[in-house]
Length: 476
Image (cartoon, rainbow, N blue to C red):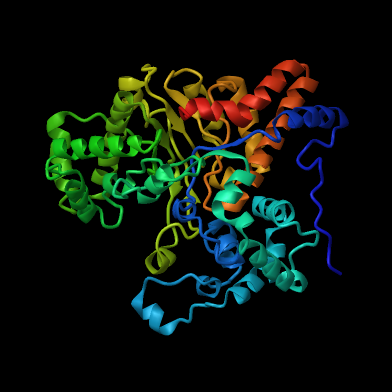
């Protein structure tokens, strides 16, 4: 029997009738607000070229590591999902599935694996509200889904720019390396289209000595900027050059995906000597970590000078599966949270710039144990700090609930930055924002019903959390 697909209007609201009633009132205030998506990883060429998406598989499976990591965890080979190996031996020996319908069938057959996960909620919302399905995805409905989605994608109404407007996206930020030309963003800026798509400056490839190709990237960095990156002063000048270039296209933020939150403030001679070691390609793991630590402090200084908002995403062992990394490259669903310290590791940076109101440093975490112990007290004191929303594994209803419960009493609401979706899955953006809006409205409703907040204050806060705080924090 094929089950109906029904999105309950009270989904994610409390089972307590009093709380649910208030949550409904608050949600009506925010459900139709424009979307601010200040940090993400969608492909800017979608919006510069505005070509029709190829098919359901290319759009909804291949770019979304939330989807294929679950399938992989249950023994589905990445090659069976159409992912190509970078290994020439693999290419000759292992068949990569090229039939998009067969790949879609794998998702349909295994869709039950996503029960209770945020991915299931996001996908069901996309299926229902974007494509109009009223039956659940399963083996029996796989072809119906695939054909219906593909037929829709072939129309002008489902081209990237049209969907951007349909989703009421006011701003969408992508993320690019300093070595990127930003050609797609220039095309968007020079076009007649009014959609606002900007980038973020992500310097990891030229800041992390353990990033693959780091030494050659430093050389390219110098050639691109006309700076002498064989010296530390020239290297810093190259960063200033590219940051200025990015900012001129509309960029308002930087983003740093360091393994830890460690910062340092090294004397001039010491950092110059360390830089000579890291660009030789012979640095130890400890030297690489110290260089990254010092560069976070340098990036903070540059943010004070040029006004770019700084984001730090530490606490994750990226590309943990070495075999998958070697064969398929980065971002294939193998990022694993690790314990993270903020109080001591951020101290060198905060000693130097923590009270400077010209700096905005947004902290993210994958280590929820740091919420009440470290992050909330830090953000509740230092003027430069703001708390980013739950990210990656915690971008979920329960993750959002834990965040509000543990952060609010110490840091308040106004030391947070609203919501960002941090996704490659374009069609899931409205669904993700809707989950965040529902969860925040439910949390505010609890405070109202506990008589810790007045209804009018909750209504103001609902709008702040859904829309205004992100605009303010990211200078949009």
